[in-house]
Image (cartoon, rainbow, N blue to C red; front, side):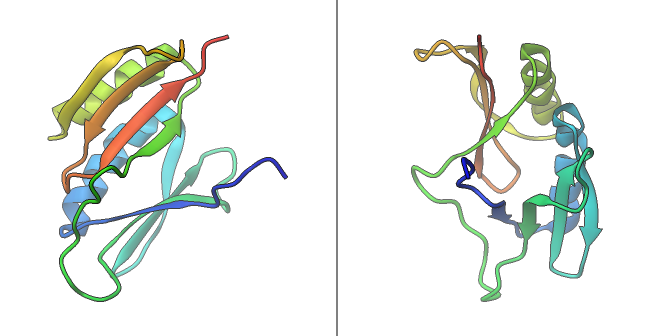
Length: 128
C-alpha cells in the first residue's frame, strides 16, 4: 500500500457557503459532491464516486471551526492548467491568495489559497 491519506476533513462555520466555494474550485480537480447531510458534505473523484476523499463539516463538538497554524492540505492536479484554474476560481469565490501558481523549489507547480474559513489549501502538479 503506497497511500497514507484516507481522506481530508476541514471545518466550516457556514456549510452552505463553503459548499458553493468547493463546488466551484473542485471541478478543476475532477472532484464532485457525492453526499450532503445536515452537518457534513463529502466530495469524491468523478472516476471513483464511492471513495470519499474530502469532507467539509461543522465541528462535531459544536464549537466554532478554527484553522490550524502550520496546517496545510495539498491536493494533486493533473496539469498546470488545472492548478491555474483552481487558484483563479478560488480567488473569484472569496479565497485569499497565499501564493500564486508557479514552480517552487522542488521543481513542481503549486498554487496556494486560504478557503472561506481560513484553511490553507495548495494544489500541486508534479513536473516530470
